[in-house]
Amino acid sequence: MAEPAQSSAPIRPTTGHVDGHVVRLEGFRSQGSGTLTVIGWDRHRLTMLVIPPETSRDAAQHVLATAADKDNTDAGARLFAAAGTTEGGVPLPA
Image (cartoon, rainbow, N blue to C red; front, side, top):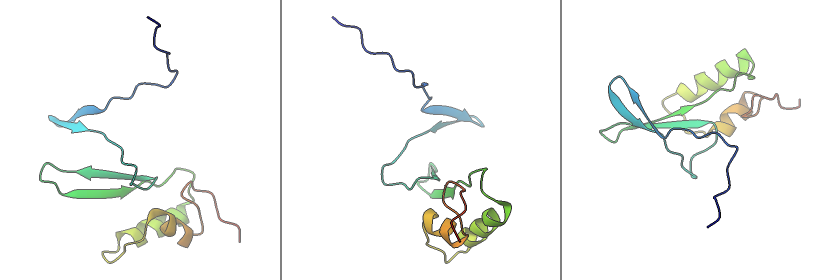
């Protein structure tokens, strides 16, 4: 029987412990890039937008302020575009 091919990709844990609680990490194909969804034991969910470190301070503040508006429903790409940058923190051409 042939040995399985070895992957050079690091093995990432899918569970961990935070403050005495088990936390499971999963990805969803339907989830936008640059977001992280936290689902509590009571099924409440919170989706967080990740701001890349390459993003300028002004753009990051704009994105966070807009995302924090309780009436905002924009996806990450739209939030970043409105701030003049991409989701990767690269400024859009003027």
